[in-house]
Image 1: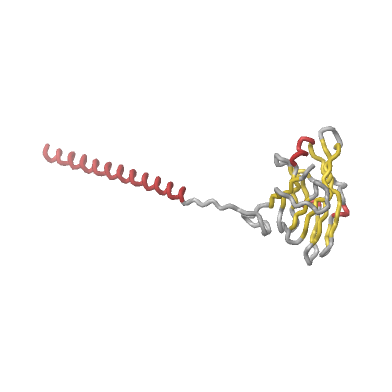
Image 2: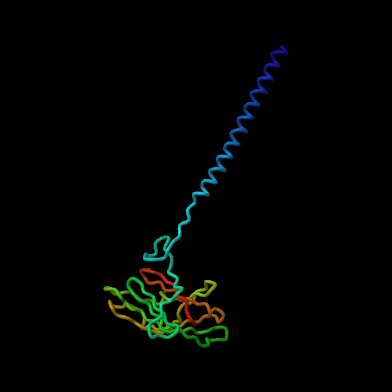
Length: 193
């Protein structure tokens, strides 16, 4: 009877030992496999660089950042022009003056929008914003060039001076953010204030 009982204990212990060894071997292999998969996925990761360009706000297409502006021939030192598919944005001049209180500065941006296409284009106040170095956005003053906005006929242009009130500390690193209605191309233009 002891022999029979001893056989059962030995058989159970052997079976348990085999089960434990199989489980350890499987988890070790799985760990290596997961580690290898992680390494393989890391080495096969592809970074996709997006280049701003022609597009209508599609995923992966960012705004054009104008780092080296094209000066306007015969224009002021702060003049720039940006050529887009259906229009040209010209910054004729940028100036500043004291704001409504000591903490604010008024920034005046003299602009021209030329319609270079064969269809009329929209020109609206919300197409123009100033962006500070920290990402703060500043919209137009309510009395800023109302007659400038509206539809611009094919091969026509409109000019005005747009007025913005900004905190004085942001003036040195302002950019004009221009986003047309159809978002043919969105641009950031550094202003020379």
